[in-house]
Image (cartoon, rainbow, N blue to C red):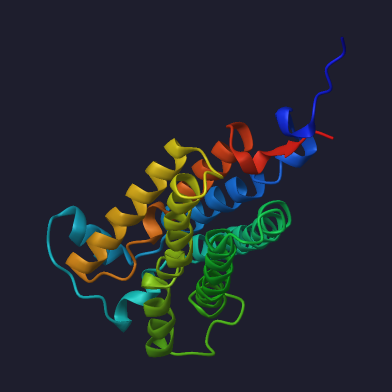
Length: 242
């Protein structure tokens, strides 16, 4: 006696995505690592301030200090930073393609790409100011177009400039927590780590009133989260088998 099996009794199977479809998160890893280098590793400070900090003393930076700024650090930082921004835009576009379009009802998925675009726009300006300081500063191609007071303005812009725009990535980290626990689209471990990171930084901003706190670890979180998506297991990296 033959028994018919209805569609309702057949559980859907899931097959891994092709390798090429799982590589798109690597754009986020590239952006995060380059952004960390451009923001933190290539941060530029006057030598007098560095020496004062090393000695445990307070120091007030003035226009007289711009002559000691390292031009090449700003120059390389601007180039690496622009590369980070370009990779972030590609990552955001890839996220829209592979996540937003597949889960159009998810507001959190849209928050992630929105946060990435916010950070990319702000970082483009911040790294551009680093490039301008390298160009107009001592040893630059157009040195002499601004006096030390004018160069000091550019330095002030680069002080917190590369740190503040990582706020958009911090918002994306918070959205990862929602995507993991509420919508089950990401690994819960990744979602928990991301939510704790976002909550911790936000709490420190409230406590200390420092707007640049999203910057020091924003790039590292983006890199680690992107690698986790690429090589871990989440619903957004699986597709229904035909």
